[in-house]
Amino acid sequence: MKKASILSLLFLAILHIGCHKSGGSSGTGRLIGFQDSMKNFRFTYSGEKIGKATLTPPDYDLGDYATFEYSGKNYIKVSSSKWRLTVEYYLNASAFPVHILRNETGGDGTVYRSEVLFFYKPLTNLPDSAIDRTLEPTTQTTTYVFGYEGKNITSIIRKASLDFERFTDTTSYHYSSLPNVFRSSDPLMYIYANLYADLYGGPNAFLYFPKLFSESTLDTFSQFTGGGNFSSRLNIELSIDHKIIKDMDAWFVRKYFYQ
Image (cartoon, rainbow, N blue to C red; front, side, top):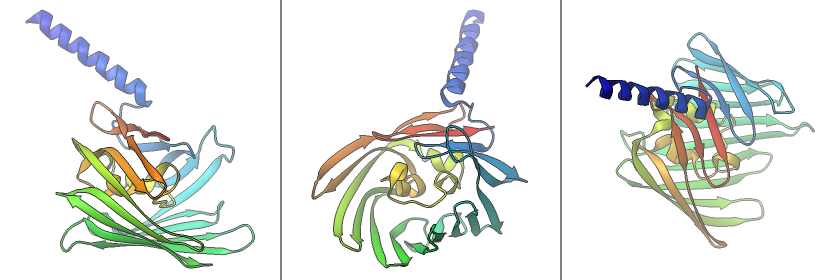
């Protein structure tokens, strides 16, 4: 019994060290950083909430990137004076987005305004659809329609009406048996890891909605378009207390840091 106990303790110690090294953090405590192929952020807190995001090496434009303002439990404003942009999040009682409003001023003074509207099934936190549309200087609309199995998004039909293009594509999703590790790691992870609310571009492509709304953790996804099909697996690494410390698809790697 003593030998078995010693071996068990040794195994747990090795497991702890391995998880700590793989993510640069044991995953305990609160979120203090996020890194993807585009930016490397560190967060500082004002009281119990994140108050500022700062860019860290190897980014060339180091320094303060964004500040966070909170009003009650249903409003968060992300502002960047350096990049002359704001993103306002209007949330429901469960901290899911109802309306996202983006404002940005370009270097030539042009104002860019856009919004995302979410339409939920009655008495649930599961959206039937979402509309992402630009308001200035031109009007463009992308509509997302969600299909479900239980409380997991299993398909998204995207219909885009842009300046010179109209298209429709479909993405399908499959899940592991794990509960949604992104939501359990931080209910506002979808804001802190995607400050500009980019729904379908760059490192967030195809992942924004299932990470945010589905009950389980995403495993694989496939997109079907008129130009061809592709598939990818979302590989994840968890800390010893089941917080997400890394996720990776065929194109991008995202890391999460805690303290």
